[in-house]
Each structure stands twice: as C-alpha cells, then as structure tokens.
Image (cartoon, rainbow, N blue to C red; front, side, top):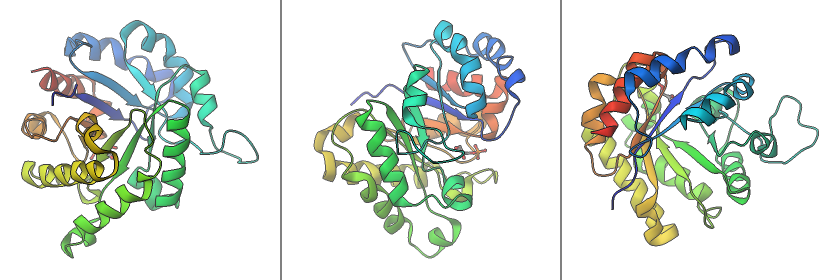
Length: 250
Ligand SMILES: O=C(CO)COP(=O)(O)O
C-alpha cells in the first residue's frame, strides 16, 4: 500500500512570531519541495499561526497547533479550541506529545477526547505515542504502546488521522531508535490499528520522531511502516529540514 509520506516539523516553544516567516523562503528554495510527492506540516506555537496563513496558502505547507482543548468553548483559561483552529482554515493538530504528557498532566483519556473532537470536526489529529527509557528497559514497550493506542481506538469512527511514534528516550537526546527498533513498533501500531479499524489501517501514516536528522532519515524512511517523521530540533534549521524533505521525495 503506497502511502504519501508526511514530513512534520515540531517547533515546540521556539522562534518568535516575528521570526517565523523568515524560515520558509530558504526552506522552500533548498528543499525544492514537490507537494504532490510529500505532505509538509509545521506544528508551531499558537501565536505564530495567524501570521503564517499566507505562506500556507501560497506554498501548500500546512500549519498546526501543538495542542488543543477537547471542548469547543468555555471557561478553560489558557486553552485553544478546535473551532478556533478551524476558523483559521487549518486541518492538522498535534495531540498527546510526550512533553504534554510529562509536564502538563496530559493523560490517555484527555488525548482520546481531543482525538474524538478533532475527528468529529473533520480535522486530522497527529497522535503521539511512545515509551520512556525505563519502560523500554523493563520490556514494557509493547504494553505501553498497546495501552496508548487502545485508549483512543473507540474514537476512530472514520476520518483521517496520523500516529507519531516518538520513543521518549530518543527525543532531544541524540539517541535515535535504530531502524529495526522503530520498524518493530510501527508494525505493532499498524497491527493494533487493524484490530480496531480493519483495512483502513493500511492507509494510516505512521511517523517516527526522536532525534530524526538528515543523517538518519533515509534509513528510517526505507522501513515498510515508516511513512514520514515528526522532527523537533532539525526542523528549526531550514537546511536540515529541507534535506529531510528531499530524502522523503526519493
Ligand atoms: O519531540 C520531537 C518531535 O515532536 C522530537 O524532537 P527531536 O527531533 O528534537 O528529538
């Protein structure tokens, strides 16, 4: 099953709104990105989204928030709703990033609620899962990934979604999962999805994240069940992310 690769950058809490637009001319020039071949999404701070709409329109790059709330409106100080994101004309949203789970008390249940509301709104969640170092070392990887996938499975009632496998021990550490380690978990995720949604699981894009960079991206993308990457640090540098998008076009 040929799945169109998706290369996503996650800027996390980096760059100022006034600096954000400067990134894209250089990225587009260096990458020679062909949008028919690869989808490109940047998850940026919410303060940047409005300023980037024109760039999205002209280039075909999709922009996304790094988090959303599952309720449509109400007394949730500091939160951003899915209708607000949709009102900007955006389609993707990152949910369940391990930094949200670790530092902001995001749980399997809140992730599932966000997935449900995004799919009801016909948006495309990019749902992050991944085990910690302690969990991997105690042979709990399969158990943790299974729990995380099953926690939102009941919300998968149609619509497009993306899963990002991000082993927590590989994020920002310079440690990348080996191609084989990553492929094993991606294949597990697809098997679990198949149990829930049947053959549609073959169309779901599963991204790898965790110290992905120009030097290791081709090997990762060559794996059967790795359909792209969710890139942190290397997505802040136009030349690095351009090289990674090029790798996905080959
Ligand atoms: O968390 C990540 C992307 O969401 C990965 O970050 P790094 O690519 O910096 O390891």
